[in-house]
Amino acid sequence: MYHPLSIFVGLRYLRAKRRNHFISFISLISMAGIALGVMTLITVLSVMNGFERELRERILGMISHATIQGYDGTFADWQDVLDLANEHPEVRGAAPYVEQETMLRGRRTAGALVRGVDPALEPEVSEVHELMRIGQIEDLVPGEWQVLLGSGLANRLGVGPGDPVTIFAPEIRATPAGVVPQVRRFTVAGIFEAGVHEYDTALAVIHYQDGQRLFRLGENVGGIRLKLDDMMRARWVALELSDQLPGIYQVRDWTQQHANFFRAVQTEKTVMFIILSLIIAVAAFNIISTLVMVVTDKQGDIAILKTMGLCPRRIMGIFMVQGSLIGVIGTLIGVVLGIVLALNVESVVASLETLFSVEFLSAEIYYISDLPSELRMSDVVRFGSLALVLSFLSTIYPAWRASRTEPVEALRHE
Image (cartoon, rainbow, N blue to C red; front, side):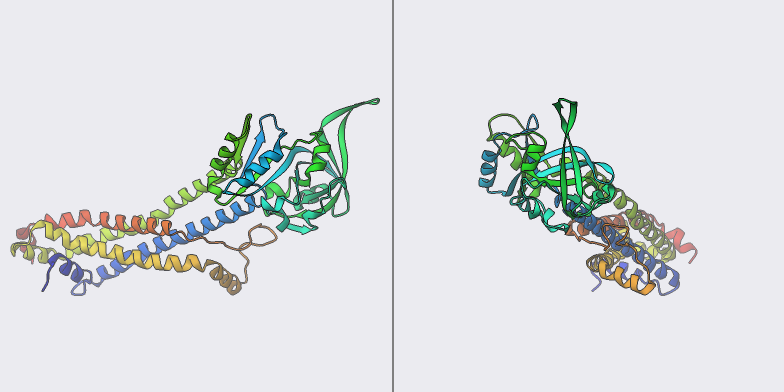
């Protein structure tokens, strides 16, 4: 009827209603602590995953998954490489580009990265065409010397659509008046905003044929940009393509171009996981204190059970069941609440902003004005397992202490 006995007695001891209601209250506090810790971990890491995804998508909206460049910075047989790349089953799009760091002058002067693209092929490898605030990428016509500026760069130069912008090429040319830099006046045809400071304040886009003439590349380009079905395989696909080409080429993928940024995000997530795990650890210590009080409260019961023949192993099982049950219930509650909150964090934050008449992420200050969230089941399993393991470990010492109870000493004071 009461088999297994350890589970039956452990469930009974979970409610100390005979003499000490305080122990039941501490048990509830322990459950709530574990639930709060698990819920917080799931929610916070889901929000950080959402920010990482949002920033990654915005960065990849301006760069390609991978690039193949000539070893000396120029690419002569780029048309053949373009055809070869389009034949690869994992390549979604390929486009040539020209790129050079230089100076721009409008009403003011600023340094920038000038990128020459093919307006017909660029939408296959980036999302610049979707990020245009003014104008279109199709406005870049070879020979008309048009330029698209990031919103921050346009502000730094003090120019707008229709204004002239002078681009200084790094090359110099000899004239009867002496050596002078190569310059060309462009007209601002549009403004884009990617939501990434690095590109909004330091990127200018021109037609690649204009870039060839400006930077004196002849028919060469700087390289080929690739967009793949699986961006995680970017480096391997680019290496496969470069191995099929004669000569030596440089291969770069999106993780290398922003390695420091993604390492920083991963470090922040790891540190946040460690810090928030302390909430669960504190709740686990509460389980220890709860079980120690239960063991003290049940000294007489333990002594009677041992005199009836219950072995120390089963005595330990009773209190390990009680403590583990506190952890299991708290973990389940925390997982459910964490999943619900992570999936609805945007609406919850919007409701709080309406209720308290505040704006947590102002669109005038932050590029990301909402609170993105990406729930990953691997995180849920990891956090739930952590809570269960800590809960189980916290039961070992109190249960061992209970199994060491001497019946004679315990019953002497009953």
